[in-house]
Length: 345
Image 1 (cartoon, rainbow, N blue to C red):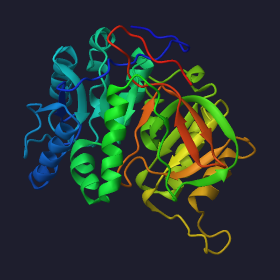
Image 2: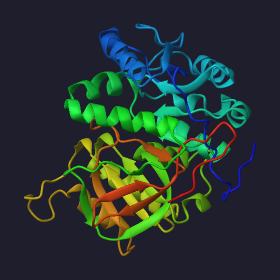
Image 3: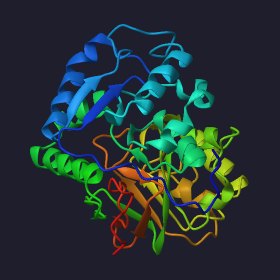
Image 4: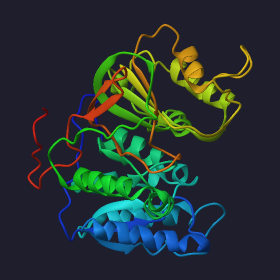
């Protein structure tokens, strides 16, 4: 199927209590030591009111290289979930490095016929971006099951866990816009300003990889968009280089704002007390690449690899006010069974 740059987003149908959510190995394998974390993620989803099932490939010890299975097998299982009308949402158990191997094997017609929320981040960013490009599907850049719901959520303060459960449940079940995401003291204004646009992004290196495929998002999709990204396990020089790729591709000339996640394991970043010219802080690195592009930048927001994730729905309009350190979802991420959504506030 072909989408135009200005096509409306393809929203999944809102979930209802008792709907089936399947946890699947869409990328990396399940290591046996993380089985307890996976079980805890099932408990979290059941507490939200959903039925939960594990897909067959999600078996501790099963692996092929660094994948849960050969990419064609992952695609076959994924397609079966997309075609199964009983399955109302799919959450990736973990990230990894497998999605590039089966992007061309996904049944996009099944997605168009029955769009479902697909949740995850890291390697799953590729799926969100490519499927949004190919079908308009709203992607749920949100916590993974095993390291997220069953891992990082479990060590968060009880009040934070309750807040996240309510937020995720509302995002999946309500056709009313959520409004402002819960901010925290970590959020930083790196460049003041306001912007309103479609939220697009994910793991920084996966954004760059997506744009190198034939499934790249057309540049027009970035017109007025709010770009969000995070990175982990990399070098400061690599982050700078990926951002330069986005600059050379023309993406940075089109966006209206930027939201940066909490960095994790980025080597070579300097602290605020570093000597001049030594190593840049992340804000300095970002602003260096942006140059004189006068767009708001909100930094250190909790999404991605650094801990419990705020959900960032790809393809939904948001309002960003960097000075006030606020980010608001202006549209619902799901629709009613009849395809209607609540109006924007």
